[in-house]
Image (cartoon, rainbow, N blue to C red; front, side, top):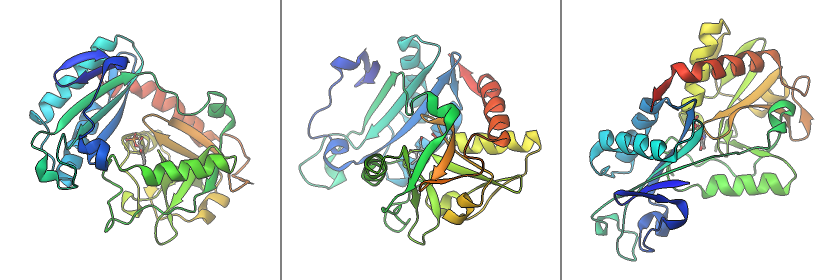
Length: 288
Ligand SMILES: Cc1ncc(COP(=O)(O)O)c(C=O)c1O
């Protein structure tokens, strides 16, 4: 692992942050997960846009501005030196006093980690994931807007833990109204009557970069696609379902709450989207 921190690039084992950083004390900060495919940083501009918007959302001034952040990402990926990688970009509020007050933190801290990642075992890509509905709801925007990719992931962490303890791979998370939001780390799609459906981000999901790419690709493939509020019923009645995320990739879902979805294996729409995605990664990538 290579890490850009406090102005230099070091090996992962050498990277340190002070214990009074409010990113650690309060989860006060934001992050991005970005993929490098075939020596290109996938959708770098979209990630930079979301990172900048998230920083504004929590009133954090990105050190040097977004162009500096972008340059740091590229520099760290080059230092890692692999054609395929995962970038974890973090901005914390920085060091401050032992109180929640962010105005005691004069200097936000930027960190960029580059390493390899594997969220699900490779065989799940062909067999599909088993999901359970989490008992934990996504926070409403009036609590903490889930469109901000903040360092507060305890809601997601506990949903994932519950899913693992129940023998499943992943958690399906509902919003306060009981409608589908997303999983602990990815957006969801279902196919019903040949139409690709995904909940609007305002139903409690992150505005996923992979999700947006899948929607664009579906349109070019002639697959009808739209945002629509979904319930668990839409999964039970679906022909297919899959999830999307930078770390996760595009992964089929074969069951929800121990009930098979569609034929219980990856379907034709998933397959078309997966192939189109793997072909598009070069087109949508910033060369190193
Ligand atoms: C909660 C959550 N939802 C969805 C996603 C997918 O977003 P993206 O495709 O931009 O990685 C992520 C990140 O991977 C996430 O953490």
